[in-house]
Structure formats: structure tokens, C-alpha cells
Length: 475
Image (cartoon, rainbow, N blue to C red; front, side, top):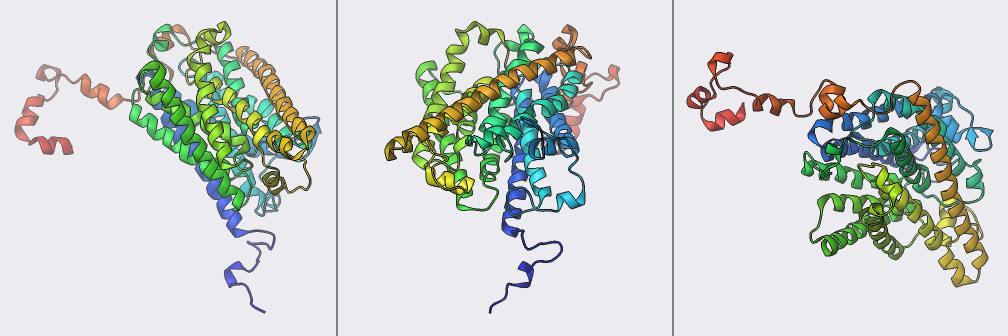
């Protein structure tokens, strides 16, 4: 009988239950999801705001990622995927012990350490998305308290309820392939709620937004976010499988369709395409496909892209200016529209387009426990399809209501310790007042250069006279 090559034989570091290919893919997927945040959203946030808020916006993302990972291994992971404490909450415990981390994960053929990291970068990006609703005015000390509190008392509840096998929504068989509820709907609702309690930016900062300090870097950050979604949705099956391939392809097809739809609407109604609009269309497409990436057909991904590029466009560009509640709340990155609206759309459309065969492969079940309404109508199991749609809607209501209530409590608690909002002087000055740093300090130094020897500065003309322009450029 043929034997496996020596590098595939089990040993103490590679137990017989571990699939090296799956483990390698899952670590890769986790890493590219991490790159969506660091540096993806750090670059995007730091580039899309006015120059005076570049450092603060980037730092909010940078801090959140670090704080979440620490809290995640200290108590967050076990609260999200461990033993049940109460109805919708897991029991807090550390995820640091070698015996626990090197054992097989609750799903997949890889160690728990891989699962902890993969789920940790998902938690990290969720808090960073919330930051997009709070740019340009939140007290950085309040943000530093908000992050661990929201992770603990809000994120872990949604994750346990929907993703943990013991979660109540998981037992009802809600379909959330890779985070449409847990990440995007949660972040969109929480960001909108927190923005209400923090209050708006200064009137000057709200004028002509986005007045990006570097639109090319906005596209660079958006590009990292877009390509990183291969790991975001491709890691959902927890294996290097055919479903992972389908999820990746559907993700990018939906995103591309959404971008084209958004650009077409911008061009037709506003007279010209917008770069920032194209980025928003990209995000809505990626968010919308996430809950169903590996369980819908490619043609359904295109339909979802058209819907995600049009309905959020309408709510952002038209409805936002008509509804008083939307006009009152300052959401700089439109996280409510791009994540709450698009995430809810994705959840509903997944309930309609989910393919029974793909759901059986993903959830490893038999029968018609998971079925989209479109297929239920086709094969005469309408009741099962309506039940699936009802579960999808119930999960939207739960995640939305819980996040409104819990985010409100957290903001009110933080407000008793430090102000949620920066004072007026800091709002006028920006980064220099908050961090003592500026994003473009080198340019500021050159701009203030005084070519006069009475200021003990070297006359720039003498430099030009003694060196060629090429030499100057090399300095």
C-alpha cells in the first residue's frame, strides 16, 4: 500500500485531525482580513477626512484593532464561541492556554489558535467600522473606553447568538455566511446610535465632505478593503473548499456590479461620476453579498449587486435629506447606509436566493432546513422558504434593537467618566490639539520656511545656485 509523503504524516505538531491545506488557507484568510483594517481602513479613514483630522481618524482605527485583539484572547473569544452563560451570552474565559489553543477548533480541521485569530480580526474590523461614524469629533479617551466595552457587551452577544452552535439564532437556522449580521448590521446600527450620542462635527468640518486630503490614497485603502474580502468571505467555510472558491468569486462579482450601478446613478442624476461614490458602491456590494456569498448562484450575486448599488444610493443621496432623524445624525462615512442598510438587504436577499444544495454543503445538514424562498416556491416547499425569510427578518430585528439599546447604555456610561465629544477648541484645531502631531508635518515645515538669513535660515536661492535641481530632488 502506498504511504503518504513524510511531510504529510501526522506528528506531535501536525496531529492526524489537522488538514494542513485548510490551516494554511485559514491563516492566510485571517491575515488578509487583518490587512483590510491595518493598513486598509487606517489609510482610507486617514485619507478621506480633512487634513486636520488625518492622524486622529487613522489612530482610532489603529487603536481599535490592537485593543480588540487583546480583549479577544483575554475574554472575548470564549464569550462568543464558548460555553453558554445565559440565553444569548457565552461564559468569559481566556484563550491563552496551550492545551486549549492547540486542540481542534469547534469547526474545521485546524487548531483553535487559528480560529481565535480568524475570528479576532473579524471582531477588530467591526469596531473600526463603527469608528467611521464618529470621525472628526469623538473624544479619543472616550473611544478608548468604548472599544472594549462594546466588544464585550454587544459584539459577543451577536456572535454567540448567530455563529456559536449553541446560539439561539443558530439553532433557528439563520443564514449568515460570513458576517452580514454579526459585523455589518451590528456596526452600522451601533455607529449610527453612537453618532447620535456623541453629536455632530463642527459645521466647518461638515461642509463639502468629503474634502479628502488624498483621494488617491482613499482608493488605495479601498483597494485593500476590496481585495481583503477574499479572505473575509472565502474564509467562511473554514476550509479550502469549492464553497470558498464560489464565495470569493461571488464577492467580487457583486462588488463590481454594485460599483457600476452606483456610478451609473451618480452620472445620470448628478451629472458626473464620483470617486467617493464608487468607493461607497464597492462597500455596499461587498457588505450585501457577505451573508450569502457561498450559498447563492453567480446570477443572484449580480442581482444583489444591482440592488446594493441602488437602494443604499437612494437612502444616502435622496432619503437622507428628507428624513429628519437621518439629517440630525452626523455619520461621516455613511456607515448606516453602507453597512446597516446594505447588511439588512443582504440578509433578506440571502433568505430569498439561498440554494438548498449549497446550504447543505455549508451547514453539513440533510433535508430542507436551509432554503431560499425562490427555491421553495419552485419545488413546492413554500412554507419552509417563508420560515427562512421569517428567521432572517427576526435576526435583523434582534441585532438592530439590541445594538441600539446596548450602544446607548455604553455611551451613557462612558459619558459619566469622560466627555464623549471633544471641546470646541479641539474641534477647531484637530490633530495637533488631540495628539500633538500632524499628518503632514514635513509639508508644514517647508511651507513655513523663511528664505531670510535674519531668521538663521539658509537662503533657498543659495541652495539652488550651488546644486542642480536633480540633486535637490534627491535630498
